[in-house]
Image 1 (tube, rainbow, N blue to C red):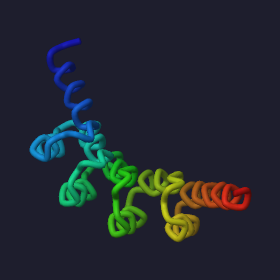
Image 2 (image 1 turned 135 degrees about the vertical axis):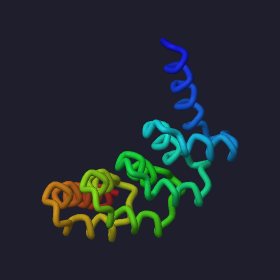
Image 3 (image 1 turned 90 degrees about the horizontal axis):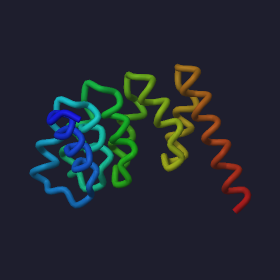
Image 4 (image 1 turned 120 degrees about the vertical axis):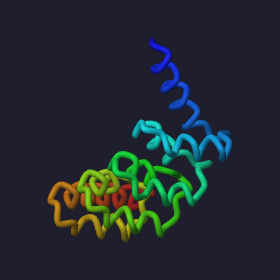
Length: 132
């Protein structure tokens, strides 16, 4: 493994650490590597102002990473459901922790793959709640 690879590996590990300092979060959120930015987007310790910044990232994987952050609030999810990239909406449609009304909105998405995935997720959640 080269020194650069090792450095990227360490950055990736640090970006997922919930004990990461805010200074490190800010630095890694500006990384040239979209995998590191996605990891920061998923980290529950990432401050909301940085999540808002990552919500507008050029890479769809980074934006999708925001949706998998367990502390993300509704306004961010509302923006992601309306994302212009179908891959982001498809990823959201698979997310069983998304509020049901947003899953239903995705079930009516213009992209048939997104809509179908959201319908499958909704049906799965309905069958789980019925069995409980």
